[in-house]
Amino acid sequence: MSDTRFRPTDLEATKDGGSRFLGFLPVAIMGYENKSHLYSWADVFISVTLQIDGSQYATEMKVAGSYDKEANGNIKSCTLLKRLYWLFDVVGFEGGPDVQGNWVDKDGNEIKDLCKHLEDNHSTNPLVPKFEYYAYVYKEVSKKDPSKSYTTVYPKLTPNTAAGMKDLEGYIAFIKSKGLIREWDGKSSTKPVSNGEGDVNSTSNTF
Image (cartoon, rainbow, N blue to C red):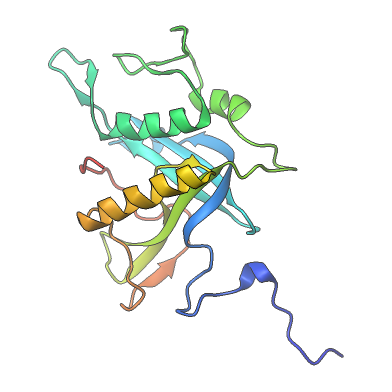
């Protein structure tokens, strides 16, 4: 019988008791799912399944919200559009919504199922995943119950390069300085919750 315990490297913990799979991490995009039908406030809700390098578990990045609109009903510049184009640009998708909010490709042709299109063209091989992006993974304090926290991925990916890491680190430092991220400080009594959805609400900030 062995006299030492077995603890795989992916189950290691940091000194403060948190998961080592928090912070700035290399990730692979495994798939996309449309969940807009589940939330009345969401014009768009794209659930992006990410695999963190070194972890056996997938995590979710949400790109969700409602469009700001002109008086005639056309969409206009807003937080949701910014976050959509963060995703589209980093994965190389050249389409997007038209002014009515319908999905089109780079030539203006209709895309009936955006998430299927993205999964077919902008995801990795699950058998040999490529960790092409950096993500910021953190514990977010729940708006509804401050005693709870959820593992959250900020909805901005950058290329897995030195420049990409610098870009993401700088942006996260900026929004933290503005108080625009509700991150658990590791000292309060918040309890991690792993229901897969987290605290899903529409957001009104512009970052």
